[in-house]
Image (tube, rainbow, N blue to C red):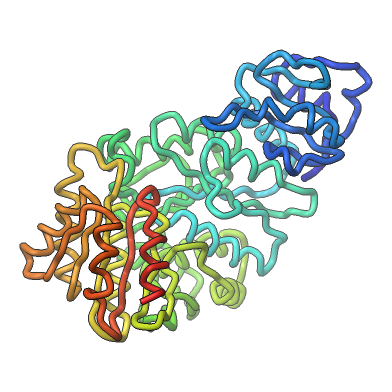
Length: 453
């Protein structure tokens, strides 16, 4: 992090300083909310969590050499210097917004219902071919994660790629106040967080709040294959990407190589060039086209973009291919909504191997239409040639019913323990097994179980 003085933190957060005045001139070299990492130069931010209250560790952090603490309560003996604030969450956001303002570099904000992290990683891999690139770690994309991302900006960085995730109205407006992106990249507007946003039009309105915090020279990079985004006119210059006719950056001659990756040609106003994505998943072509669009806007050559795409790596449990003893497992259980599950089923259909099996769990926060959306996923599985669909969780009963209605063999289990009793009998040698559900379902346990068969 680019260091700053404690007095800067007081001013940025709008907090009240408690302590000796000379402490205000001490330098802060990093910010943390983990008391275990407290050390000289740290600004410790105390959060009151459901299980642990960070305020209990303020004195300990100061003993370790922390410059000061940010606190939601009056500090006691041994707990100063401190910045007293009404909300630690709002304070860290305000500090991050101030820190971001210290940098005159291009900032790319990534949003959408599906594929944000993949798109962020693809764009970063491309930009790294020419620029020292700062990016969101993992998927720290919410009102707590984005501040930590911004606070890691350093003088050496030439461009920043920030993932921005929301679940309700107003959140994107607050994130945009911190990030102030120059380029806004949208992946897909899908059926996610409908419990709060109502419908896809609501999703677009909520995510479209990003445009409110962009300047007149801002750029919107939109997925032209998404009907809502193709029709979106954000009041600024826009570039579309996708497979559809009329996209400014268009993918042609897509060749799905299964586990070996995806090849395609990128065509744009200045010509065309080939790229190869070294990872499994048809959906990666869209992320690569988004990266190509951003790369071209940033002045990269086709060769640089192709080299960046070739350097891409997936993150965590996103379409990770595991060759287990009895079967091949596609671990895609980081999260799920109808759009991402359909994309996973499309990719599965291109994999070589034996029988295609899906273990699909509940997709959460889908609102009143949840049952029908689950049913539609089951129908899609049948249409994509799945030989056996296993539903696990109460909502996945609808997924099973949709698959059966289309003639697919499908079984339902109310929970993981019930599934584990039968899993050994259900999986045959040579099967290719896709595992996908919302993160709260903890389906990584199923992946681990499959690896022991």
